[in-house]
Length: 152
Image (cartoon, rainbow, N blue to C red):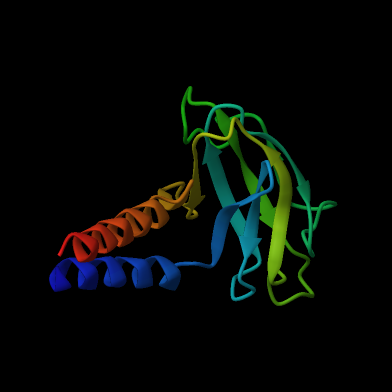
């Protein structure tokens, strides 16, 4: 049991270490959030049924390079899967994205959305999934521990 808890802790810390941008729920919608310790551009894709829209927030440069839309093939990365993809950038004078939401009001079906970031070659890296599976795993493990203690 201790080994399992240690593994869950290590995986959780690894997820936090890669946290520059994350996709999270904001009421009934989704938003991309920056931790402020990021560069000046984000190439992204969000895959999920009903994923659409989005409104720039923070210091996103909407008059320049930033563009996104309900076209999973904007960069040709998600094929025929539903979702949005695009690029967000900040002005050259800023040091990076502000801490907090950078793209808000993203609609979705409330079931599943996967957030990917892309490097310059178009390779995808899965950042996180909403609802986040580690949270459900930790809740389940906590319930098992409580049940075991209660039965003993």
